[in-house]
Each structure stands twice: as structure tokens, then as C-alpha cells.
Amino acid sequence: MAPAARLRSVVIDCPDPRALARFYAGVGGGTPEDDDPDWVVLRLPGGPRLAFQPTPGLTPPEWPRADRNSQQFHLDFDAGATWEEVEAAQEKVLGLGARLLHAEDKDDFRVYADPAGHPFCLCRIE
Image 1 (cartoon, one colour):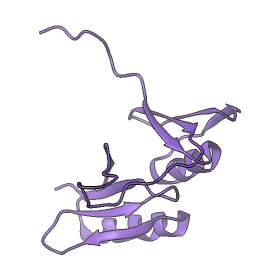
Image 2 (cartoon, one colour):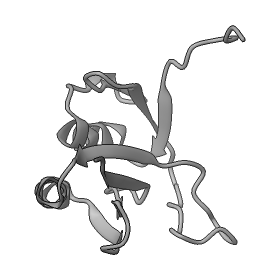
Image 3 (cartoon, rainbow, N blue to C red):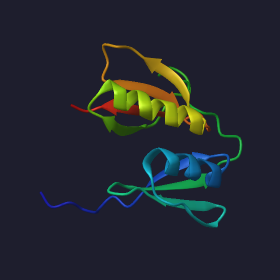
Image 4 (tube, helix red, strand yellow):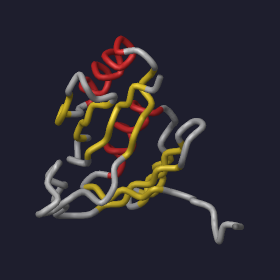
């Protein structure tokens, strides 16, 4: 089946678009295009385009709750094939301002909250 359209951007609501774009540039690479404070774009190398727009009074999702203020989506990042690579990526995202939400040895992923409270994952990809 032919697609109706191509994905252009994943748009993320946040209190401070410039700050969150800089955070995700630190996680996934790229340089934010922040000429407009109300619409900041980050082109992830080899990945999708992320855009950030201001949302005053944003209430972040309450991960992992689905009964109240649940997440609408989350981003998964490939952090490498080994736990050593995942640990190195974890140290970097924590240094950028992320907060660990979930980590269990049986899972091939760890869940974090970005500085605005949105969940995202670092995944171990074998």
C-alpha cells in the first residue's frame, strides 16, 4: 500500500522549547534551530526531526500510570549492544538533567524523564 504522507516531525509540548531541544541534542545529537522561541527544531542525525513548542502550564505524564494524565507517546533511543554502553549513555543523560524512572536487569531498556517530565527510553539493542 502506498503511504498517504511521510512523517515530518515529532512535536513535543514543553515549558521551554530551547532548553528541551538542547537536552535532546545532547541525547541524540544535532544542533537546535532556535530562531523562533515558539518553535524549535532539532534534526537528529540519521533520525527523525523533533520540534518543540511552548505549552504553559504543561502537566507532565505520570509514568507508568494510565488512569490519570497518561503519556501519549515516548521516544526510544538505541544506547548500544552492551550494558556498558547503556551505562555510559545513562551517565550522560543523567548529567544532562534526566531522571531515572525505571531500571530492571530483566528488561532491555531503562526509562527516564526528560527535564520537562516526558518519559523516554535508552534501549540495549543486540
